[in-house]
Image (cartoon, rainbow, N blue to C red; front, side):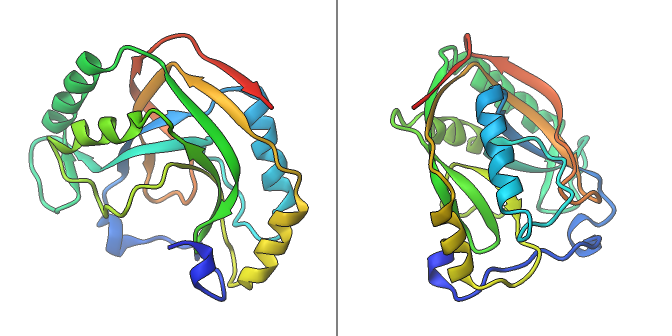
Length: 214
């Protein structure tokens, strides 16, 4: 849900979520890791500017989520959000055989979901939906909503008024980037570590990477 539909943001509570992970540890996804220094610097500037509103610490790398797979498991599925090694292999082989060209994306302005601040991602060539469709041939995406590509800056730590977030966004100087993505990754984060780092397990190379700002 976008922020303009509610009066207050939805905070994330710092606690363990056993009703979600059921003791499972590795929550897997396909993603694009942001690696350009200029864009990372800008994202860190945004995070610092909004630090009074955001849940910290946050050690997760800036990234664009492509497809949420679920909890990694071997062959036995106990929950509807388990994701097997066989399903990964099917997705990996399909993506590797169908994607060899780099992806061009535009990174736009600041925006907000009800629970998180983010930068917009504009996919003019509509490549990301194709990647998602290929992944979906072999597993259902966990908690699938209408896909909105983005780079999360941070989660909100309290129920601040929406207007205060809008005012803060308006005060921050806008900047846009155009990036060429050379790699998509498959990895996981530890479910018991809130906003912990992503651990890459596999990657698919697409081409050389560059980044231009304007």
